[in-house]
Length: 104
Image (tube, rainbow, N blue to C red; front, side, top):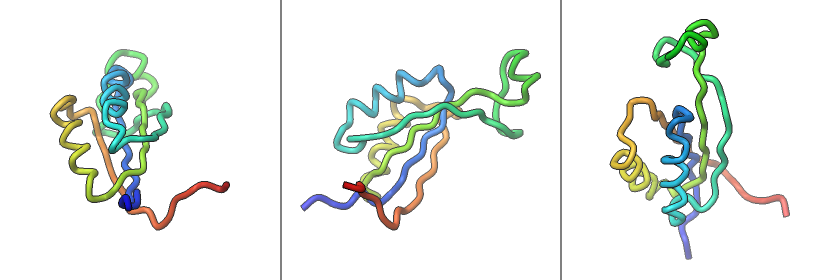
């Protein structure tokens, strides 16, 4: 019996790292069998702005990847990400899932 995927991992990073992050996740289906990726804007003092357009707008483009993982294995995936993509511009957080599933 496989362990339940009981943790939602969220990764936030600049679009310049999209191929690296997505590629790494696709290389590890044991941890990232399914995930979603969507575009967002980063706001706040801790968000590095580059270029005049970002400075004027006050926000910077970001991508968000979310995947449901086994809580006991999430740190292995994070270690792989750190080794391959050590960058202060990649942020993450995780939350415990009470429940997940499919409607049919």
